[in-house]
Length: 301
Ligand SMILES: Cc1ncc(COP(=O)(O)O)c(C=O)c1O
Image (cartoon, rainbow, N blue to C red; front, side, top):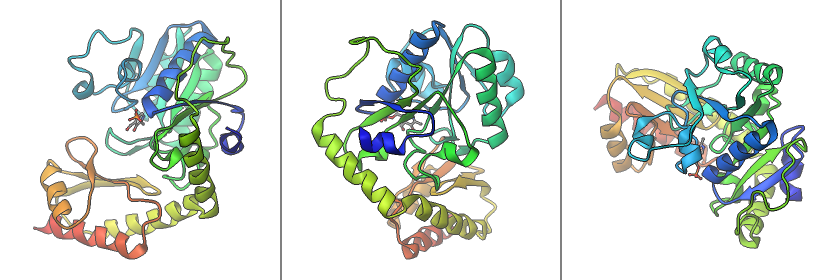
């Protein structure tokens, strides 16, 4: 807990420990309703926040939602990176706006600094809370400990999980002391269990001592520069920050993912057309070059 608090985003001096990203999002949504006394949330098209009912209700894509209704009431969706559409959506009933700093599952869409700062300002003006979901971007992935640092953001709540404990189940919500939670109002049996905490302490120590944020920044630049040299009509756009990279194709990506796997490169899709590269932050430069070479080959075939 102390170790995490030492790394917390500025102004967020409290931490709630749980077991996954979805649980962190659930906790943030509940805290936002409890703190503001308001019912509604705004989130973004292509956003992904998890598969439990609250987190799923904040997730836009019908692929994940359909068949599980009725979902939690009170969620509306606006296009990402479009302040003009966000502005009228936030009103006196809005408890919070929940956004990723870089949308991962939805296609690796990088949030613009002016947009995210504008949303932060809007939330402050209208009494809503800004919840940043850094489950995928947190802990050095984008070249900073948290992606919000790239834009100097000051959210009210930040959800993290995934690499926090180096592969053991753990999630957390950072929040300010403004979030007052009466004893017993929210909790979870295994949140902060000794095994995950020991792994978390070791993982956080390693991230800092090995400067994984710096590594992700440097290697991400190298990977993006190399990918930009690939001359293929199949590529529509390459997006990314740090070691979170998406290659949007003009066609379905699944066959290319299979061919990459046959070459020893495991990549995931982010939507039907985007090949997503999330290499380990410790990857060697030679391996990074192998990934780019393999991609060039499978796209040329
Ligand atoms: C941005 C984001 N939020 C939340 C989640 C859900 O995390 P978990 O799978 O640990 O519940 C994910 C998982 O991919 C995610 O990428």
